[in-house]
Length: 152
Image (tube, rainbow, N blue to C red; front, side, top):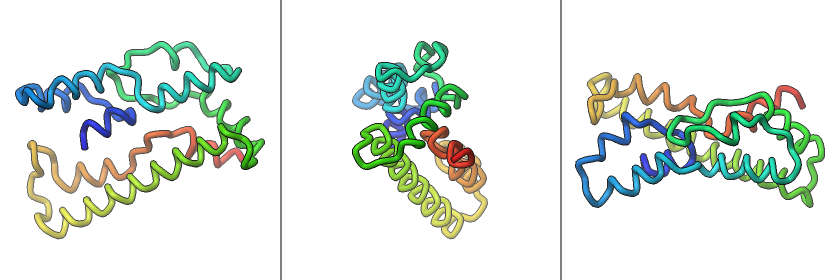
């Protein structure tokens, strides 16, 4: 699951190090931590398609979690203002929103299951348990695709 999180862009060097003592897992975790995420690659595509994205979005430390940026929201907003089924970037954006939504539902079900089973005891890996899970339920992998809706 952590590997999937990293591939999608929710990265944490601290959480990656938890796998450093597992020889058959660590190389893939380290690679996913240091590589551009799926969203980073999609943002590069937007730039190649002529959308003006700030250089700080396109050339950043890939091992850090992605932070939303106004130029990315502006790019998605221009794409969404031409919402048609033949607009491939619009369709891509909607697919990302659907993926994000499914993962959010998964995290919510995990949160409620853990709350039901262990209550407020500490979670695995020393996490705060349900408190931490409640927090991760709010995470969005593709934040500008959610925030742009206020401007539509």
